[in-house]
Length: 305
Image (cartoon, rainbow, N blue to C red):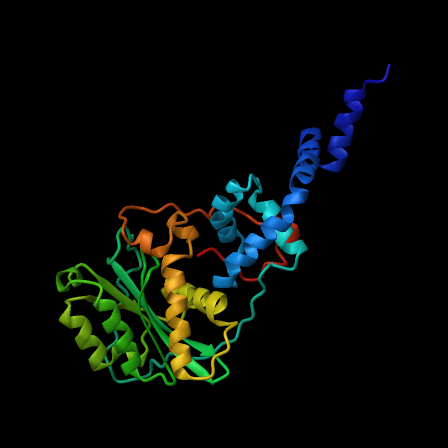
């Protein structure tokens, strides 16, 4: 007599998945079909404030509302739903040089090569990025806390003059007391804006240690580069801006949403403001998570933060 279980096991081997997985898939499909419009509406509501937010963070922020509606939807299933409805994020890259390091000012050594960051206000990273608008190309200076990923200071301007980077640093320093500066390292590239006398004098006034990159490799200031990308790609790239005053208003709102509303995979899915109130090692959620192969080509440059 033929053994039916043997035939089923052979089919499992040929098809590449188990009988249990097959049944679970169809149960999941049957149970979620009617909920898909509700999930899409929740996604669209969230993206009114976070129009370029990726699927992993959407999934985390949607949990409360989906629980209220009795919806159970895993991350992979959400990515499939986003892909099917054209809601995955594609990103374009354009490059503008914002660093001029061939100047007469002193350049400082890199102090953070082996530094383990375990608390807020231990390490700040600074950088300048560009922003293409209807008004023209603008430049944004950021100062970010490396532990919490909180943007501490920022400024947008029509030029790369050092005064604008100084303004961003002044805003960041307004958040701390002078005695905290003695335990703080400020890290940047070797650009003129960060080596000039006014910027160095402001750091010295708080007794902040100064660290700089040694080459032009973005990995030497990776956190700052990542924050640049998040703000531009998720919050600024879609905005229509026709004046510097409008740009400042749009940037202020973007920084607020980033600091207070957007969870970070590298901060145990806390928003930066929450992480900034903590100390100790923060769990990185992204290390053990991978996209499905069939979705990899659809989610362009959605790297972990």
